[in-house]
Image (spheres, one colour):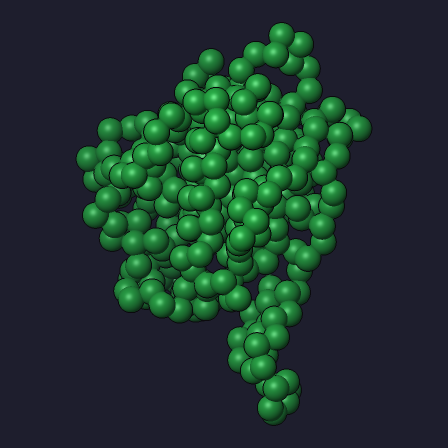
Length: 319
């Protein structure tokens, strides 16, 4: 039972996060941090960089092994999951996933460590992520100080990707690319894995699982309390975004899980994007029998390995 005064719980999302009356935030998972390294099994190298010392915005970079000719490689700007409020770019979950993806796809990765709610409510995570995209782009003309980007990256082959809330960020960064630049890079495509989208009106299977939908909706209000349109905020419901047709890439891979409530929103996103007048190609890949971000918790299962292969293939289709 919640106690009175400063110890009173004002927000409680079991197994995720708890916030107390005095402002104290207790993150219930995703708090572990692993250092950058050279992976023993894959040879993938990683290192951490500070993008903006004033805000603390930083990133973890990944470089694949076995590039003897020092060819310019596709690169991926990746946004981690965690409901905008838990996990980091340095969590073991995302470090291990990106080690595997980099080894499989032979791409350079910039994994963005944006500031998190509730201490930094949305849209701060979007603004941080956009600052990271612009920082990456600043290297395209020989500027910037990061050697891995200047020496190994083909700026005509940029991708965005993310899981869940990170997929939401990736989409919204794609919208900004289409309307605001930046110059010097070409966003070829995006990979949205189990994207965290929503909307006021239930669709499809949401109508028979209103309890889970209510939790998803409540969580959006928690991380973005200033959203004027609630769950129909265009940042959360892309169908309400007048800029949807300006999405700044020409191909898109959306991964959904058969048992994931958010599958409905991933499929609806595809439909709305195709109706918007956007001129690209969007493909849905469904993992049979699987729930939300299953591959992060069971990365060696057959469905997870199949998804990894499909994402790696997508990132290399333009070669």
